[in-house]
Amino acid sequence: MQSFVEEHEALLAADALLICDGPFDPEQPTIPYALRGMVAAEVRVRGAAHDLHSGVFGGAIHNPIHLVGQIVGSFHAADGRILIPGFYDRVRRLSETELAALQEAWTLSRATWAAKAGVEHLWSETLASQPERLTALPTLDVNGIWGGYQGLGIKTVIPAQAGFKVTMRLVADQDPHEIGELFKAHVSTFACPTLAIEVDIQITDPPLTMAREHPVVEAVQRTFATTLGKRALLTRLGGSFPMGGMFQQTLGIPMTSIGL
View 1 (tube, one colour):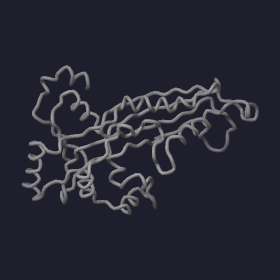
View 2: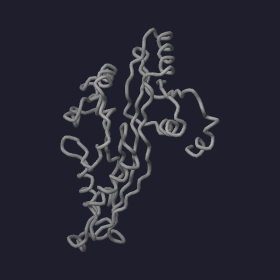
View 3: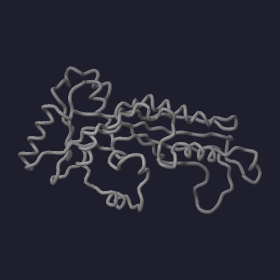
View 4: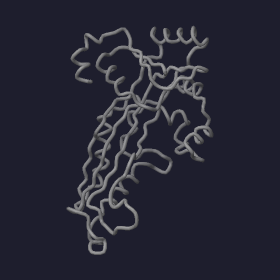
């Protein structure tokens, strides 16, 4: 898609781009103007040439799962702050106006959000308000961990390899390629002579910030006023829209969005 857009930039030229995606509430419509970017990576830790018997080799062979646990455990402080050096350096914090608008558009309480997730308590509440943490601050989540024996019962192996998959959501001014390099540099600090570590950066999508004040936004507002009898609130979403960032960087045209 990137190469197509670059090759046909003149054909795709427009006054504005309207994205129709995301949540929609007819009782209170919203216009999302910012989405987070994403970096996705897979880390593999390799040891012996094949799985080994822990009764024969245990205590003398470095277990890849143990190092995976150390790496994963190094990503966050107890309060949820991400500990990768430089990770927050370029984060653009919300202005007072943006924060007030976000709070106004945020309708779910802490209790409702926790119930929606099926938990009793939310995490990292000392970092920022709930809507900020969910839409305006970057995140790092381990999406899966693998290694060793996963079947029924016990199998006394030292696995030959282990690994994990991780995604990081990025906010305005964070560069996904830079964050990918910071992630690799952090993981590389766990390098040791007994195990090999490989880091594969698989996705680097930039965050997307769209127009808040523009004729196309006012056109959308008039549409909501005509059809629903009310103006939309400007808000942010915590997810990502990779094509939006690609269109914005390549075509450089104003963008806005509505839910479906």
